[in-house]
Image: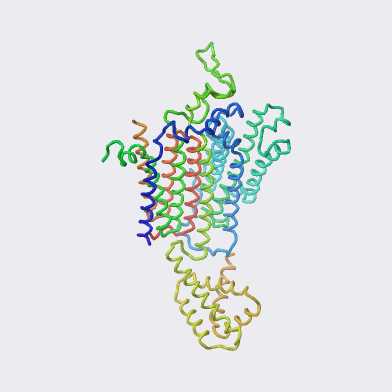
Length: 249
Length: 246
Length: 82
């Protein structure tokens, strides 16, 4: 079986390598991907339409905002599914663990983490808010924020982290993120535009249509950040305790 | 062999990146098929996903182009450059459509956007797959594929053997001996020799078979009590520690 | 020239690390080597000009993905059979 798999994989590899020789050369400015009209339109018109210097954030949150909304929903569903798979089903008896974790939280580690975690969280918020002008945005900031909670769980124990961010609140915050995202989209729908067409938000806020898109992008990224933060921590909490929410890593 | 225009030159020198991505794809694919441990299979799946993301991002690379964030001279908010402490020069006058000569200076932002989504969805998929692995471990006690297949085959043969034997029991409830009862007894003795997870599995199967219907349940329980008093007795002591712990 | 050398080196290292991650028997070592793989990819993308993707991979791949793998292995057997 393994030999057959190896031979099959080699055959596929040879086919792929044969196809790879027909690719445009590396970094060619005239390659179809680099000179496509869609990309040129995005590069040329992002400044005029949205006044956001970071083209990737603009395309992610404005031009392709629908994709991002459903990606957020996918992350949310994955977190919910992990929680319900591990929570439901036959209750696991306490199997003997390979490495038992029952030491006291170390003094140096806890005090260092106590100093570092606020800095991490502020940096995560900065990355989220500054995603318009520098690399960053909702996902990166959200994951960094979730990682700060995981750091608390790793240096003390999971109980301390869950005391600060209980698992029910995790899912509430995650759902709130999606509600914010879809809410901004629906708001622009009610104001006469299409779903997620942020320019129509200029009718109720005293800004120009371009700045309306700018600020709506920030709102949308905040929604994404909420969901990603909560789900990353919920994922860690469910997986490290096998659904029990006790004696975590 | 390595002269210009030959296939080796084309593949290994000009397009080395694409060749390496193909190699990574193959490593990931082979790991998903041939590895025994489920966690190694998942690592193979992750390697496969990241190789595809690598490939996708690299088709948008432009030689000599900068990152897809507006340079200060094209900044839509307008920017000033400080020439010296007294004068500032207006570098850009605000938002305007970028002229076509300046467009090739920027990398294509579209593959980056799509792959941002792909990375995040990849980690969500990994988390979900790991939770299914944990459930499999909880149910079968192992995450090695060959042991799992063995246990599933045994369960299948036991279930198919048991369900055929259930029907004669219903028609003749007082039948204690006979070929059906003997083989069932033979199966239990075989199970008692095996390792730890089987008592729990037997309980799980019993709990599953209990939901089949009241008539069958009465017939089965009466038959079981008549034929094999042992499993009934063994069930109760095994339950008590569970209740204490939970 | 220097950039191409850097590119080639990182790519070869990537293949080596991928094979290593699948070869070791200990699952925690496998997860940590997978983190190395993530970081190397982040470097590669930063060199290619995809800074947003590099940022995301650095946080998600080397941060959350590794921790989640180790947290799962914590509940399973640490030694794989092959």
